Amino acid sequence: MKKSEWQEKFLEAVSNCCDEGREAVEYIHARKTKIGMKRARKSVGAFWTMAGSAHLNSALYSSESSLISPNAWTLLIHEVRHLQQGMLIALSIYGELDAWQYQFQVFKKITGRTLSPLAEEILALPLSMDRKNLQHARQLMTRMAGKSYGAGLLPLYPIHQEIKYWLTGK
Image (cartoon, rainbow, N blue to C red; front, top):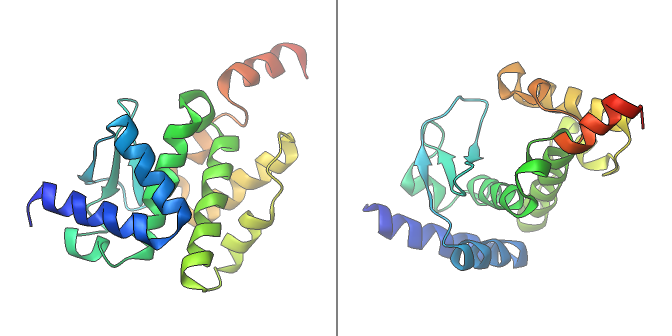
């Protein structure tokens, strides 16, 4: 299947899965966001780039499997959430917690399935700027995705707020 044909079909599937999918696809079209597939670590289902693109991990999804996979659809929705957040928020545990929870909520909505106990625990966390909560979120993300996921490399807060915290303790 040609890349352009896959993109069209994949975005149609995401758009048709739910309101959140439609909104993500509208964002992609409005911003002319490039989407695709690229190989990444196995701990990464999808990723966004600073150039404003989003990609599924080709080690985990094919053009055919992605068209019928709620996991693939919600991973794109997750990555679009990061693009909407902006780089400062997206590159923080706070931004990851927001995107993971959004992805899990949408997955449950469109599939009716329960999540793993670990995913449910992440979903139950408050989305707040409480450091202990964000440290716990980081631990859960690392347990779920593995150390190679890289959550340990991200600051808890968006970097400008993290620096303020380091300087003032507030």
